[in-house]
Length: 196
Image (tube, rainbow, N blue to C red; front, side, top):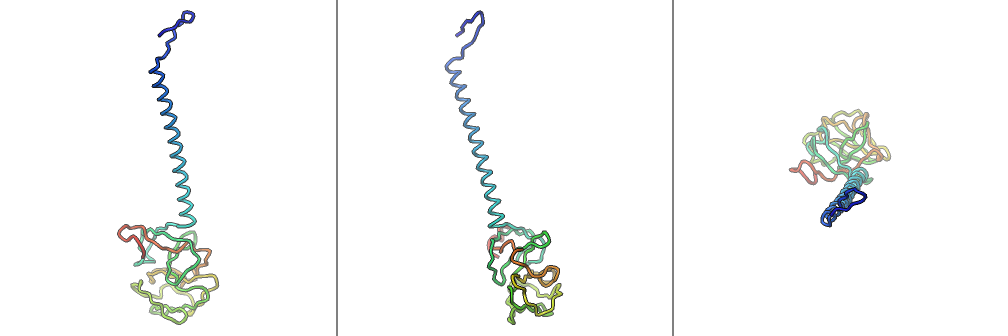
């Protein structure tokens, strides 16, 4: 259909063309809403995941061999925030802008002694340590027996001959403020997933 307005020709779209254009606009509007909604959901999920991983369940990767054979280089583990640590719990803690992973041997006020063969006694009782392959005194510059200071934990790696831990005054006992969390679950490698 053509209308004349002062010798100008103006084409008026048909009803079908108007309906197609309306459908295209509605689709574009729906697509934009869906895209924005998806982006908001992804940002929210990522923020929640970061908060949970940072404050409640930190995920850590093992580097080195100081905890072998229990934990190996490349293992990925989940830890939980805790302030209640028992002997033989494995904890992660900050030391010189790094995160170290060691096993709790003694708590504050307890007496630790390590003989030349690497046998550990806490408060006069020899520790049963089935997770060790070899025992060693390792790098130890403390005078034994040693009393763990208040508010601290005495920690040692499972690979005693190479681990630098509370036996060395360079690391010393770990304060509870340094602790990232207690390791509870291995998520990588898949062949070893689960408790350790």
